[in-house]
Each structure stands twice: as C-alpha cells, then as structure tokens.
Length: 171
Image (cartoon, rainbow, N blue to C red; front, top):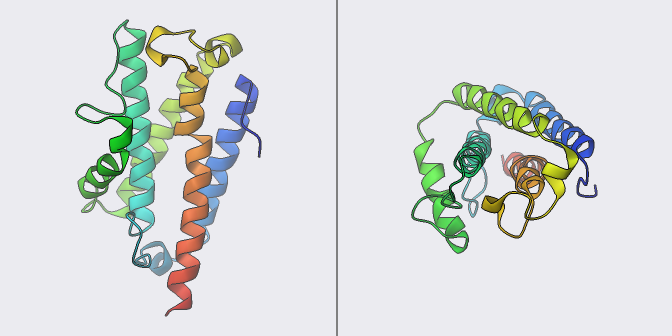
C-alpha cells in the first residue's frame, strides 16, 4: 500500500491497518493471544507488540505537545538518539512486561484514538508540507504520524502473523 499523501489517505490507511491488526488478534483464541513468540524477537508476544505501539503513540503525542508549544522535543525520547532506537525499544518492552494483555489492549486503543484526533485537527498542508512546523525539522508532521500509525500497524500485523504461525507450527 502506498504511503498516504493526504489527510484523508492518512486517516483511511491508519484506520484500516489498525482494524486489520485488531481483527487479526481477535481471531486468535486466548491461548494463541498469549503464546510466546519464537526466540530471536524482542517482542515476545502480542502484548509486547501492542505495548510497543502504545508507547510509540505516547512518544508521538509528547513530541507533538512539546513541539506545538514552540519547543524542540527530545526525539525519539529523552536520553536517546534515533540510532539508539533498539535500546529504547528494549526499555519499552521491559516497562510493560508485567502488564496483562487485556490492559495493554485498552492502553493501545486509547492512545490510538488520541493520535487519530491529532490527525483530524490538521489540514493537508499542515500535515504534509515539509518544514511546516519547526519542531519536525526537514520532514512533515504527516511523516511522523504515518510512522506512528499506519506503517507501525502494518509492521505489527506482519510480525504477529509470522510469529504466531511459527509458534503454532512448533507446538
């Protein structure tokens, strides 16, 4: 699916990919939803993947809030550079490791809705014009929102589908 280039495409793609992800997970019984992924993956189960998405929603909303208040947000997070993203993702995974799946689903749904509301607040130009906001640097607000939503949900869908297939084939 091509990257969204308009507000309508961004909303449509993020909503479709979110729905596909949620439907995939809902289609698994409870045992499969809680199954451990094969070795070699940072995210060890569906809970970890949804917690990852939720936390990146939170990061996105933090960047947005700070940036729209005229300041430069620490991106991707305080104390991390983009090259440190794998380390940040490990911290995120550990943060939610003891949170139950049902709770993570609620967190994910809630933060998803918050990010969707951010998208709705902006025009096409505000979303897709590069350098429109000083805090987004040389890119656009839309590019960050695509990464935090549509692209991330697509990654999660593919990862979960692959890992569940691998995990259930070895049982």
